[in-house]
Amino acid sequence: MEDTIAIIMAAGKGTRMKSKNSKLVQKIYGKEIITRAVENVKRSGIEDVIAVVGYKREEIQNLLKDTVKYAIQEEQLGTGHAVIQASKLLEGKKGKVLILNGDHPIMRPETLKKLVDTAYKREESATILTMVHKDIIPYGKVIHDEKGNVKEIIEHKDCNEEQLQIREVNLGMYCFDIKELLEALKLLKNDNVQKEYYLTDVIKIMYNKGLKTGSIVVSDNAEVLGINDRMDLQILTKALQLRINTEHMKNGVTIEDINTTYIYDDVEIGMDTVIHPNTTIKSGVKIGEDCEIGPNAYIREDCKLANNVKIGSFVELKKVEVGEGTKIPHLSYIGDCKIGKNTNIGCGTITCNYDGTNKNETIIGNNCFIGSNSNLIAPIKLGDKSFIAAGSTITDDVPSESLAIARQRQSNKEGWNK
Image (cartoon, rainbow, N blue to C red):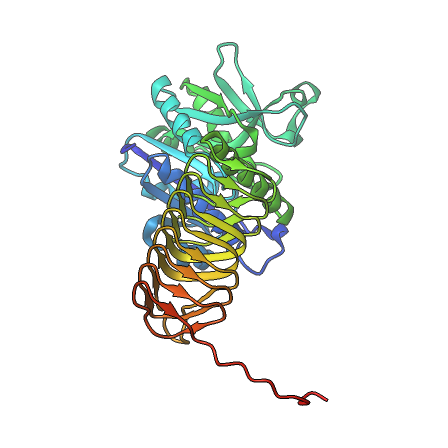
């Protein structure tokens, strides 16, 4: 969407989060709230993004760096005032501007794209995203005329009894024609109790000017929830967890307990793989078909698992490539490692990958057997069909088809513990 710009409002204090840091740098499922908001916009096809920052802005700028442009809102004087601060970056531009809040981190990119596409298709100067809720909730009510145009948005506290019954509410997400928005912003006033400039007033200004103003209703109310406090953060984390897990199940993955399985963004899992309870799989992991993972497994970033791999109980993997048919059944830490095909990693095996300064790699070949309670001191290479005796601490490379034993001969000291 080359002719579309996005403005993300990220200047608020968010005091209800009870944190010394900005609300927007709190993490939800491994990513900061504002990072998710920006990623969702860019995945919708909009590359030109402006973040309106104010409170704790250095935290947001240090996080996002030059992935967005910035407008500064020194005083928080309302949503309209926030957009006015960004208006200089819109001058001379044509097309549409998408405006949304930075504390709505689980918006689907497809929903944002639909909002913008609808605005272009209908040739509307303003198109707003709305929600229809079965209950009366304290959101601004969307008022339509007899032709379906949006006349205005009335804040909940200003509604009469009839207007309070309206179930279609404003979500604070808009798509405006840039030229018409800039003209309307000049007419905004702050003649209200809060002395703030409301972006919602732009809708009424455009409607009274005779411009087309419409709305589309979001299909999933959960994705438009915002975050104000720690409880909201937990609720949205659960919503995101269930969304991701559901998508994997639709694609042929068995998840035995959807509530105790945590699969982060951008994970690939092949068909007929089974994920047992209490398993965590971090972003970027790739798992093949017919694998068995868990229970109580922790698959960290940069792992790639081929088909028919078994990762059992209390196994942690980090930056590991695992070949087809290999088994790591239980109680092992494997990090910075490449493992070939049809290899068995015994219980209690550790790749000792950190020497205090650098991370080093362990390479294990095909058809190997690593005995229980083995320590593999990286950097090290074990050839194909090598066999490591249980209880060994291996410090040197092991040739193919060799047995490596590295444990001291037993001696008994009789009466030593009397």
